[in-house]
Length: 322
Image (cartoon, rainbow, N blue to C red; front, side, top):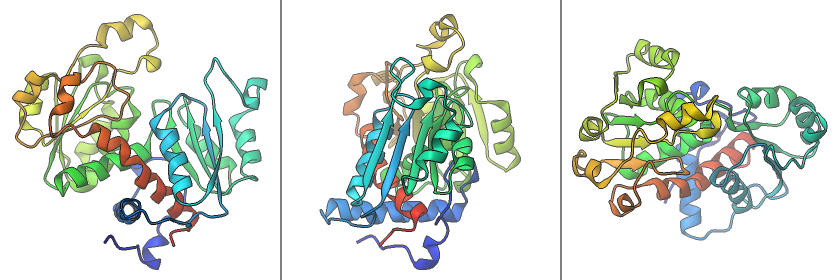
């Protein structure tokens, strides 16, 4: 049975915003993993929870989402709390942003209605702007090409469950490393474990130089390549990302790189024994459907891990782990 964190541990995130994987400490990371395991044990054993009873979360999604939005909503319901939701696209605006209201003003108002705020926006920096406007904790659920900390946390949780450890693993990160906020967030968490990293991408989608340089300055071994099969032959974990059409400045640039890499049975055949395959989803065509039957294909298990991780974030930031 997974243990509940101690009172001293719980203080590490109480009242805190979760805006970037870069700013999470190793101690906070360990606390989130421990709390997620505690809640997953409760879910598996069908224990009803009341940790967030009487609390309300604002789930504000100004950008399309399936997994992140629904798992945050599910997490709050599993904890016994309630949600109020804004879910919109540029083509279908339902909030007063359609009238020209700023995000800052909207958050100041919503902050008076709820106990915790989860926000996703196509605008890089929206998480910080929301936190500046709110007194209650803010969790960044993705801001443009910036950060997506809860995704990185569930990725770490998945690797732990699939491999039993993270220290000493070699992780290959594949695809859109320039615009992808999921890989940007993940590598900042992996540095706490001293993993060797392989960045696999076409030249025009390389990991931003400032991120690579920072990792190297902290003693992380980073290899950059365009050879997918060679990377798979070395990696314990292959983290696949889609080329994100919505991030590109032009359709032509997107079309030129969208099918750069596809993980097929041929790639799996040369992979290191026991390699796991992760993907933040949605996939378009970067993993062949036939690969789903590979035992190490963990991406659907990974998506399900979003619920206990987001339960942990909601309860820890509001001080309601009971």
